[in-house]
Length: 113
Length: 117
Image (tube, rainbow over all chains, first blue to last red; front, side, top):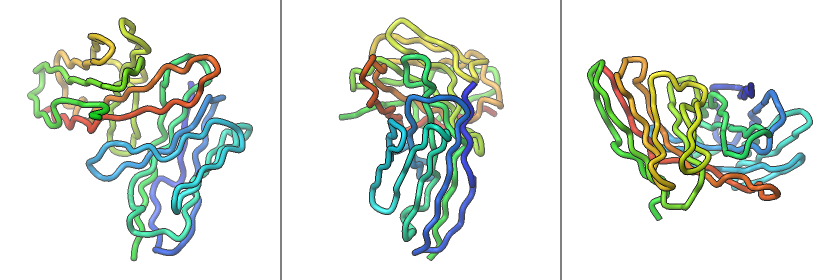
């Protein structure tokens, strides 16, 4: 059974600082996703990582994937208040043909002025 | 484009009542999903449908039934609601991964906030 673990689960950081959050998964996977969720809202797709060594960047966020280590990182550069949200990683198991996403528990990020 | 549309957005039920959550997508996706989100638990898969006419259980199917009415619509039914089913329910859709084509993405509806008292 595929398990996805995120750490930390809560992060409070100051504006302008950098930080890396982690997503580990337990079995081989086709691909990994990062989603953002604002309070009371739906999930917004941030990144889709498809292969070992994949790196994607959008604004102050950069995501990478190491399939051998079964690890993805989400790096935050020079944080701003607008990045405050909950971030989920989700993984699709290699077997099967459907997008059966397995989610981590999410990391609640608070960026303080 | 509407994407994935869920109805209702909010619902309060009494224990033992039944209801159906509706979901429709206009992206011609084959796969559809129902998740529930509880504080500190992330999203957990209740049921999914890889294509029209097929459904399968996810991680937490007990107390729920689903119907894939057609390619667009996937409904979730609570036959006898319990307080433990108080949650936010999300419907999602995506394309089935075909051999050699791996660049897919799941799109989520706005969610249904269900409270069972």
